[in-house]
Image (cartoon, rainbow, N blue to C red; front, side, top):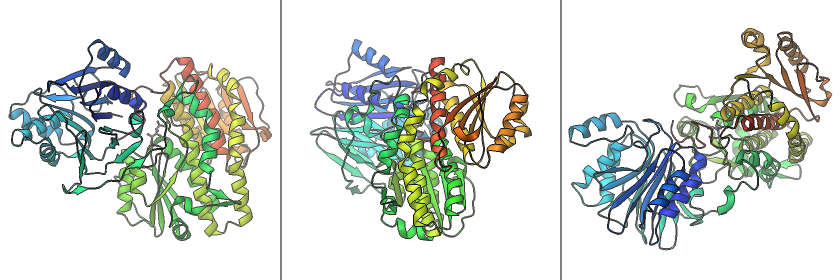
Length: 610
Ligand code: AGP
């Protein structure tokens, strides 16, 4: 989703802005641009409909020089992805602005501004903001005051970076509902949508809070809260290295991230278990006393994180015997729901910036839950700052838009949560120790599964010319199938749907023919025989089956049935493990199709608008 970079420095800021945009590419975008105030106080701008590399080329041909600038990657919401709609937007050669978020009352503001004589050059919701700042500057020469006046008129979500040619060493940043971080340099300051953008120039960051406005010059930073009072926001030192976004020799970030799962899982377990026990305090200081009181769990998340929640619901009900409801965050936030006493609210998000998940958590905080927990991969994200309890998955930055290692480490975090709750609901020490052992065996087991890469690459050839695919699972493997289908559709653009295998004959069986590959996850559990019957139904209709099955499940490859056999594994760990081959399948199909794997069309890594 849109990425913002800005800088006020003595040096020429264009290289910092361009590198920052490059590092934000993973968020997803369709156009890019930058504006710099040159030494003659003139605003210069370059925009492209396309990639940051094209912007770099244009910049190389006619470089922009100056110490104050803003830059942007745009993910279209209002108006097509074209040059006119690309940011920065400029009003009357005076004010330039970049924006991430959605201005909900833009139509009304646009009508008023047109009546006042402003000309619009784009279809964006953002352009009203730059005109509003210009208009406010007609009553005050002070950019900060003009931004204060402007944001009072705005409804919706925004992260803003604003510069004005009358005050060439000043940058104003504002945040409401969309992420924005300030990078603290020596005699220079930067802003960006996330820390990755700025790691080459600083390790020190201030995370703005909702309602904050920052007045930034080269040597001074003043932050105002939503009441316009000056506030101190602490500086965090990032432990991430600038080269964290390296592909390490892999062809795509996604492949690197799939293969880093043994390590990501191992990292996510460090200090989380001790002597065969789950360390509850890893969820927060009060976690133990909260877990003692849990009588129900409500989970809200989006996309892949939602699938992790669905799997966790099976674990919670089976292992901890605690009822659990899982909701799509964008649905939950707008519906009236009944909260059972002592319900723990759990939000799951890789990025911690997903607008719907964040809104669901904010709603939950006002709704009388026992407590709120965020399971997240990004420390200092909006979600982790909002929740009362936090479990950080230590997967390391995930750059590929398709979530892989974030998912499996979320599952690890969720399993630890289940055990931590179950301890207060009859789980014995021996059972806990056995679960801990199973968790600790995961990195090695994931590694074994990654060795199937060549088999799966071969299997992928059968999918590349198909337009549809069906994924089947039962019980906790239905969400695994859903995750497999999501991976396939998002990176290979093949339409894929997941069904509970028992639902097949209630409709989707009508679709099955030799042109519709059917993928099924078949662990050796109490549902295997049922699943086998469902698969017979597919075979009888000429459907080609791709089975990921337990070695002991006694299913063999035959004409039209391709079986990939997986070592026996405890049923509770199996959803984590069976996900791996499905990730590889989606990846190799997308490779064969020549798709843009790390930045699939129309998608964004960090979905900061609803
Ligand atoms: C996963 O492959 C997707 N890109 C997407 O569904 C993602 O999981 C979803 O947008 C939620 O993101 P989050 O985990 O950062 O909240």
